[in-house]
Length: 506
Image 1 (tube, rainbow, N blue to C red):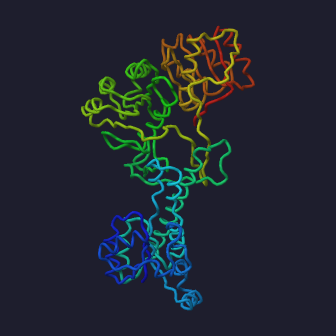
Image 2: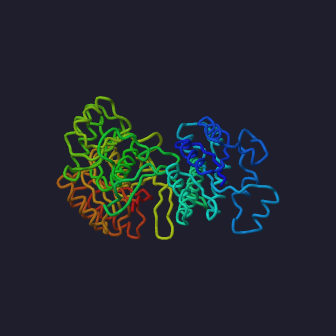
Image 3: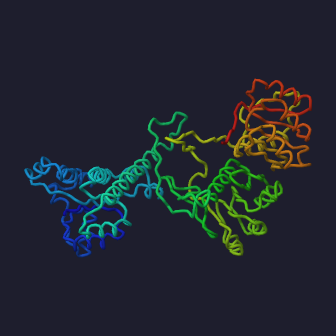
C-alpha cells in the first residue's frame, strides 16, 4: 500500500505515520510534511520520487502531476487502468492524507490580500477530490480525528468497510466545498449588492457542538464562516455554556444596538426586544430599557454598543440575566460579574456584528436576501398629516422606527424620550399588535410615538393608538386605504410620517 501525505496541520501526524509504517505502508510526502516525518525518524519518500519533477513556482505546483493523480484515480477493478499504469511504471496510491492551507486562519489574522491569496490551496483540494471520487479504492483522510479510526480499519483483516469509505469521501467533499465557499465569501464581501450571485455557497467550520437546539430533542452546533467575528467568534469571559437560543438572542440584541450611533442598550427575549433605550451613558440606557418591561426582562439577554465598566456591571448583577453582550469589559466589571458565575459574559469578535446576508432554509433549498440595514434614520420620510412633528417627536419617531426593524412582524413599537414603553410583536393582525403594545405600555402610552413595520390596512390601528394617547405615528404607507389611516390621524390630531420603506421581520 502506498500513501501520499501533505498536511498543514501536523497534529497527530507522527503517531499516525508510525502506525502506517508498522503496517508496511510506503509513504510519500511533500516538503514540510516530509521534513516532519524525517525528524521523527519515520521512513518517508519525497514526492519528487513519484513525479520525477521538482516543486515549481514557490510551491504552487508540486502535486499537480499525472504520475500522482493517475495513481489515485485509477480504478482497481478496471484492467485497462492498471495496464496503463504498468506500461508507464506508475504506482498506485491507496491512501491520501491531506489537510489544506489555513485560509480561514490567514484571513482572520488580518493578512493582506497577497498573503491571503497565497493561502488558497489548489493541489490539496485536487488531491482530496480525486481520492474522494475514487473512494471505492482510495481512502481520503482530512480530519486528524479520523487517524485512529483509519489505522484500526487498516489493521482489520476483514478489510475497509464500505461505510467508512463513504464517510471519509463525504467528509472530504464537505471540507473542500466549505473551503471554496469561504474563499468565495471572502472575495465577495466588499461587493455585496442587491443582485445576488447565480451560485451561492455558504461554508462553515464547526467550533463546537451545542447541548441541543431550540428544544432538547434537536441536535445543534455552532459554525464559523471565514469572517469569524461577531457573535460566532465571541470571547466568553465567564458563565454557563451558551445554548442555541442564547446565541440567537445575543445576535438579535447585538444587531439592534449596533443600529444606533447613540449610547444604547437592548434587552431581548425569544428574539424580540422587550426593552430598548438610548441614554447619557450605558447605565442610564440600561435602566431605561429595563423600565420598559421589567417582567419580560427576567432571564433576558442584554446588549450594549459601548464598553461595560464596573458601574454598569453593578447594575446588571442586580437583575436576573442570561447573557450580557458588549464590545468590551474592563477588569473591574469582570470581577463584579464573578459574583454571578452563571451569567454568560460575551464579547463579540472583531468585525461587524451586523449580518451582510440573511440565509433561511426551506425544504429543497434556501432563501438568501441582503440584510435590512438602514441605521437610526427615517431616510426620505414625509409628513402626510396636518400636524407636523416637532424636533423632539421626530427624534422619538426615528428611535421607534429603528427598534421596529428588529421586532418580529407584525410589529408595533411605542416609545417616549428615547426608550420603548410597549412592544407588540409577532401578531397575525396589525390592530392586535397595536392593542398588545398599548396594553404593555399602560398609562405610558399617553404621549408616546408609534412605529409600525408595515402599513395599516385599515384605520382601526390608528384609532386604537389615538384612544391610548399616542401623539405621532411612523409607518411605511403603501396601502390602498392609506387615506383612511391618514384621515383617522388627522381626526385625532396625530402627526403621521410615511417612510415608503417597510421592515418586515419574519
